[in-house]
Image (cartoon, rainbow, N blue to C red; front, top):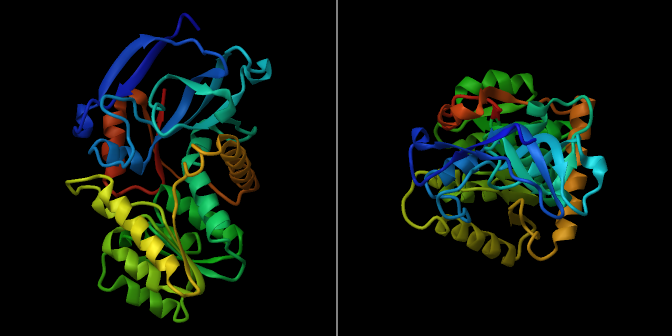
Length: 343
């Protein structure tokens, strides 16, 4: 371990991707309850796109190391950690810190990756898989034979949502730009071009009686259309505010508006439900329960991958020192799946 060196990517402020900085240092030693993980794969999620603009609603102050999740091998364990973890390939949900060659993680927060799943493949299923699984099965509680709408069906979360929905016997209508429609059709998705006129009307034509669930990462004014697409008993799951990524002003305000709408809709006498999904919900108040749920759900996602129900969607693999290029590619809107960073 001493022969290795720490390499990490630093986000110094609200900069263009090329403003990311590479920092070198000594590999840290794990403290009590921690493990030292040598990163094998980390990813570029939408959160990092917001963070570099200062738009992620609870990001830390600059400068910091981004990186929402990672997969890697445990190099060392701290006091109080079972030695059986040493040498294990694990996944971890971090929010920040993953864009580094070596990362300290609480041992209670890592989940072992089963044999047969590569590091990059597993990485695409950590935050995206947990988010998709929990929205589909814990919030919307979908059932076979139902129809759902997935906005951004070609994206990181969207592509996993589509596959998990099909595994559950659910029909999917997915919005995406026209260049992604053939790929979506191959996955059994009925595509709708989100850039066309009156997207909601075209979805209603495909599902006149309404849909069982809508998964909306866009937010903004379009969230009202998503709510109106629901059939009686349907569920809207809002999980982001992508439409406000390039806005100025308060980064909390778009989320607060979404929360306000969700509260109002649920307070009205109707047979529909709305949620604002946050993968970190409950951690502060019930950390052990949060960890148990995360472990259970990520285990289900990995099992789905081993069965072939979910195939990793890797848009590109780039080395850590090309993080700026990776972030620029992820922001281009031209890729399907997730951009992965490797050592």
